[in-house]
Length: 443
Image 1 (cartoon, one colour):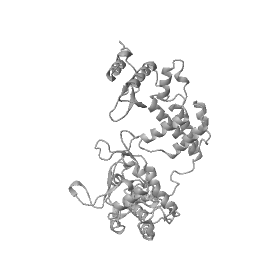
Image 2 (tube, helix red, strand yellow):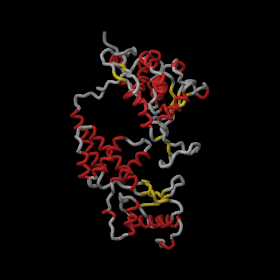
Image 3 (cartoon, rainbow, N blue to C red):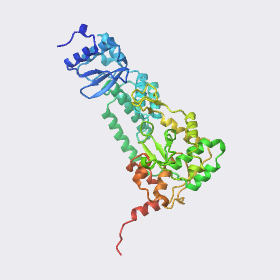
């Protein structure tokens, strides 16, 4: 039996009535969130009703209660909650006739990207701005035409599909069902067409056609020694990346171990890199490829000083793991916080090395770690130094006791990723040697 609205005075009354009505949707409150939430019991999805406040807000809770009963067993409309409540108060309006504004879609999608802990992809941001400006109708036929403004076989076509996928996820999470004008099945059809066109266009281009330069130890050492004193921070960053195989942004988050404690597995001069709450990788520890560089380039003595200066140059943005709209409060044992601007952090050193520092060149090394004379020297980027660390461990005789699995763990990724994305730069001579070792030929 339904409880009359006049008797719905408490939160518990509203919840009990929705249970009695066997409603598809249930309202929820969480201590860590200020906003009311909805659970779709049919799809098992949970989404926020921001900006509807969850606490000390019974008038709005009662309105949401009425809205849930009005929607019944239908999918949750892909409309902002404010508009749904307006329709509820105006019986002459029809929910399906309401339209998004592209500015709303942009806001929802950017917030979704932040909540995903991966940050905002520049391509997504660019496409959202383009959609806000173009204002195509919310119909699949028109959205499809917008995608086809780019050539089917080009990466820009795929980028637009990726952006639409983020929009679809954002709206689905917010409203509980995917938009009628942006179905996953339709996006997958276009992806398959793009894949076939791209494969045909690039039929004779190898996936390994890009040559990544890998400098030798001597080349790196001479380069670092030649840098002007005004590039002291950049010199420290490059030396650290080459020594420890770090991603650019990990320089902001890593910490150096200053005292050996064998019982706890801690060794002086090694680095600790936190996991996905701060970086792209899982939590790991990494040893120095060139231990003598720790003293030569003051990597330990200057670690705190240089890292603090780096953090001043480009500040870390850490938000609450429970609510990405709130800044993280250090010291809460239940909330480690999440860094959401690692792409920006990493771009700083890339731009410095590209636009301000003297160029550094290197070739793919051969089996002895020496430059391969068959390839032209390539200009080095900071991320190449991470590949440098992986390749030296695969080729250098001094690293012979270190397995691929150990090296992969020290770099914070899986063995599969290690072999696929890093060791493919090992030279033809080394690859042939590894492949042919152990094969017995008839005499």
